[in-house]
Each structure stands twice: as C-alpha cells, then as structure tokens.
Length: 237
Image 1 (cartoon, helix red, strand yellow):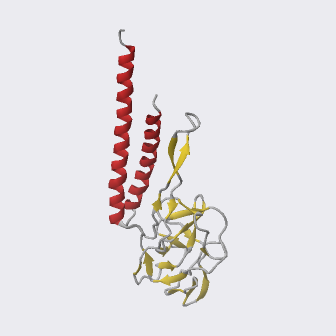
Image 2 (cartoon, helix red, strand yellow):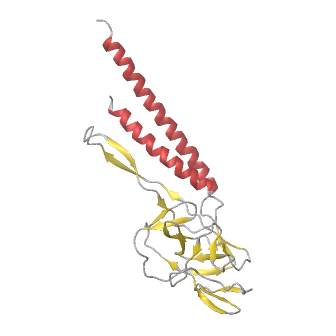
Image 3 (cartoon, rainbow, N blue to C red):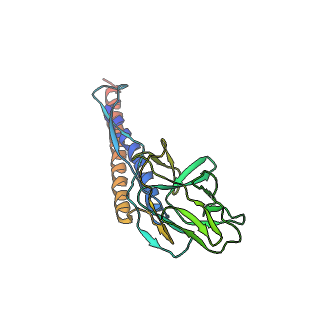
C-alpha cells in the first residue's frame, strides 16, 4: 500500500480531532467562565513504515488562557476573577477548578456552583453560609462575610501555564500543585464570560472541515489508483 494513504489518513484523524475541539468551543461560546481549547499538531516519523515518511500527530489540546469579558450582574453570589487563577470546587472525581463564579446557597447553607458542586474554602472544606444570613459580602481577596460576621474565604489557586486540562464545561483539572504568586482579584456582582470568539470559531470550523474533506478525497484517490493498478497488473498477460 502506498505511503501516501497513511500520511493522508493520519492527517484526517488529526483534523477530525481538531473538528471536535473547535465545535466544542463554538458550542460553549455563551458558557460562563469557559476557556477555549487550541489544537496544535506535531510531525511524527512513522518508523513502522519508513524513517522517511512523516505523519502528522495531534497533541493534547491546550487551554487558551485569554480571559473572557467581565460583565456586571449585581447578584452578590456572582463573582468573577480579574487575573490569573481559579476557584476550587469539590467534584465527584476530586478537586476541580473553574472560572465560572455563578454561585448559589443551598438549603443547608453550603455555597455551590449552579451544577451543584460545593465551593471550597481556603481551609479545604466546603464554604458554609449561615442559613439566617440575608446579606453576603465577598471581598477582593475572596474573604466572605455576612451581617452576622466573617464566614471564611474562597479557595483560590494559580497554576503554571500549560497545567490546566478541560474536564467538561467550565471545569478543569490541574497537572501539578498550585504555584506561588499574587492571587486574582475577586469581583463581586459580576461574571466572566467565555473567551470564545464566535466569528473565529465558525471560520475555524469551515477551514478544518474543508481540510478534513480534502484528506478524505486524497485517501479515496490513493485507493482508486491502487485498485486500478491491482486490476491492470493482475489481468491476463
């Protein structure tokens, strides 16, 4: 079989992955705190075929660290982060991180995300709001208090560039421990929007789709050539 069909197939697989990532970005253009994923490609030498045959290999999508726009909501339980950093929440699989600060208080006083995950406090436990409290204040340093007194502080964490990986929606996992450095500024009564540029996302979708279709046509072309060659060479002499 021609080396060309392997090269085209590797490219098609990589573009298929890129298509999935780009479509997910566009679908989350209005998701609070969402950060887009960006796909890059590496050239890999296929030793199984020949050291001279270069195949494209997809890399793990990297998180785009460009911040989204912060919009004022006036809701005291909405908080945005101005600067690099994340809120910590308790998920079924362990601690996760998010930029989506649309919080709410459940019947027991636990501060949660809109999806029901408990927001962690700086001391490592869930952040509890007194059920009888009517006014909640969140300072720029993440300190939470009510008219009844201090409650605790939001757990804030920063990580090295490249440490974050998407874990569904606006959640992230982190490779490695948090890094030292100034924490982000907490803005009460505001939310950070998605950093996805819809126009760019749609253009990328069209571009990746066309590249994928071109590679599929290449694969079909190589297949047709080899089928014709097999018929001609295998025919009567």
